[in-house]
Amino acid sequence: MKTVKLVFAFAWDKGNREKPKQHGLTLEETEEAFFDENKIIFADWKHSVTEQRVTLFGKTKQGKLLNITYINRGSKIRIITARPINKREVHLYEKAT
Image 1 (spheres, rainbow, N blue to C red):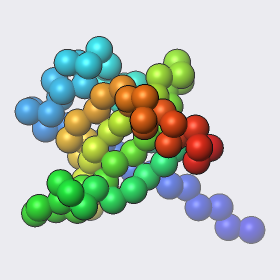
Image 2: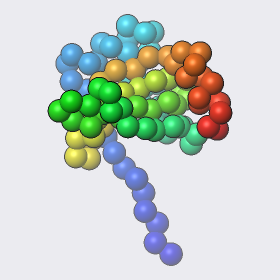
Image 3: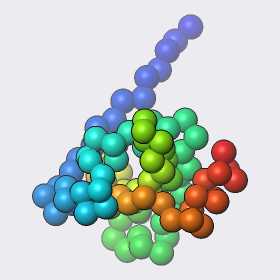
């Protein structure tokens, strides 16, 4: 039996490192949402101009539900912004899980 592990890294540029902090989040807990087994991922066509943006709804280890927008850059995930999800998004997350 062959085991495949999914390994990826996060790339935070200077301008985006502060964005989660503006919403009371740390970089570490923002990254935790990517490991939520119930996360929801969908294309963000509305904001995809030069690169394909993706939105993720996921839960941190502490149970915070987050809305994260990111792009894939090779083997790295470049987070653009992260914030707590709103009431409508909570409903979508709960409905999907």
